[in-house]
Image 1: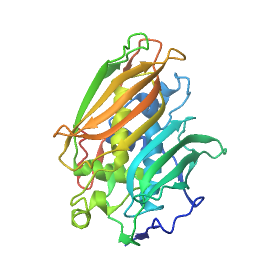
Image 2: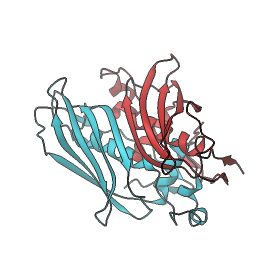
Image 3: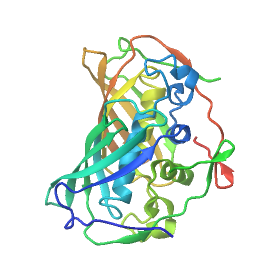
Length: 164
Length: 164
């Protein structure tokens, strides 16, 4: 069983950061389409996407928001964090096969109610910022290690979804 | 084959709005956990969630962001829209079984580059705001009707995922 441990408010310092790396697959886009309800062929149909200014399938903008939110939940501050708000600017498209790096950096500790402002940035394999933004979270007061939940296996068409 | 038609920049007026309604299932949370990578048991494990201040499983905050983004893509302005940025404030938890209403309302047409600011609000079945925020999009110039992409069937554990 996998466990994760949080960073408490007192342990966080301005400038602290964490990163997560993910390579985008077509199944990621199919999964995000299914769960969000956005079935626009720009994300799902290579032939259609080729007719658009993007030229090929792009990830849903808010898929990058989902990856940012997971970094807060899983990495920093981690378990016990309460997500208060997020703003995101979508700067460049993310394509299938792109390897993106999600970075959270402590920008400011507000002192009241354990609120912390984080910079939230995603860059692609060319070092270009594809998403910028900031989030406000309430960091946990107490040190906490939790067991991650097991998910049932998920099949997309005739094969298993691989989230790695 | 299902088709959707957009609202062009010229057709949009301040105050125009659209709504989408969705009832949250446990499979929605499993799907969002898989695609985002956020496997925190607060979203997935009823026994664990009962030990938290929320008392029961809550939806991932950014799942509501995903539903807002789908409303832009599918409803208003619809096909051809470019999503520039979004801010969201998570005001109250969303639980399994809640029926939420996503509302997009034209707040301001900026005049340049077809940019439009929308208010983005989600309320629950009790009329309480669970998510508030704003988004900036570039609305399409040209009227467009497109065929939605077909997704492969998705299985969660031993049953099909039902996104409705």
